Length: 438
Image 1 (cartoon, one colour):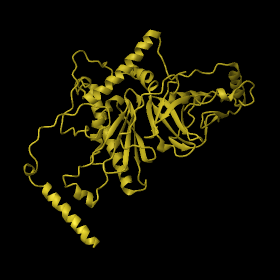
Image 2: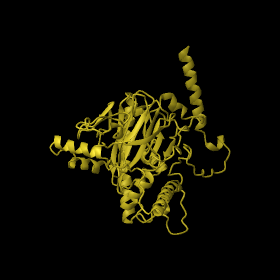
Image 3: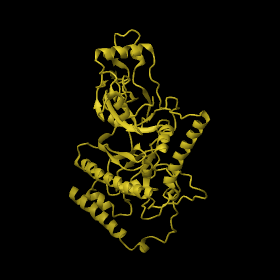
Image 4: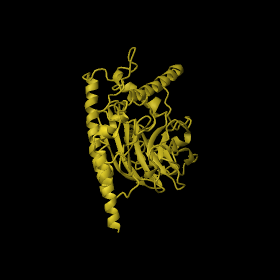
């Protein structure tokens, strides 16, 4: 009986497929051509049109270009971005899938600010500068780990998941030395409870607000991190800020799980449309995409290192079993596609800086131009503040200790360790991380 019902269902669907394959003019009357969708910053699968089907909307420039000539190459401009953007704005940093148990931590570097995110015993995710308060050496160099005590290898200073100093060899018996005044410098953290996106702001005086929700996308907390990695490219981070182009380079229309027999059969009918990836940009440097036909989504982050070097971080998340073979295959395909993204962006960057690509900035697509102009407006606003103050403004700056008790402890440390305290290793750690402007 069940076999008969199944046969009838297949016959019915096959008939629908046959009708669908009839000449189009026999099934549908002529229709007016569709108009181009308006530009929107909201996630929308339908507006991510195939670039081969429609050309990008040009940005009309009626005066001298707004962008400075060194927009993609200037070191001073990159330093301004560090002050005006990455140390002042709320930046998407990670996802709650990386912090499943107390002590789970992740380190990352963005615009040479070395950070560490860690989940405490109270389940709160906190952020800190990954810089020991003793001699500015990185507290940990591992990208991921799990420990409720973070211990600096240089001189053994240890901190708990709340950033509090719990151990300082050679300093504990010094009169007037206070552990409470020597904890890790904190980074403001806000977690989107629905999507699980972890945001951070290095400016302690910044107001919490302006965080972009992603409720419209199928991105939620409670997913599993499948895997990811960092690939470095010789590019300026801003050249990759195009949601539509990244989707094409990543091959998201093909990066999906093989459909079942019934799904393939239904795809032939007029009632079943091919699933499309949805996407969103989390300003300024992160893109989220769903993977069609799967329970997976991915993030792409552009983490600037210098004016001409960028770390591109990709991560794949899923609501399915992490050991599922199809999910693992997606991860392998994603890695190859990200390599292609890096190669294409490097080639485009070289053409842009050598002049072979022409005036690239004035001819941006509208989607990309809107992002670039927003960055430019933030840089101009910060420059205006600096001119009014008569000095550069560093929102992420943390002041060093200058009290006599600390100097007394430092002297004792030098005596006990035969001058090892405060050697070149500490300065080297600071130079490598570059986290604090002392």
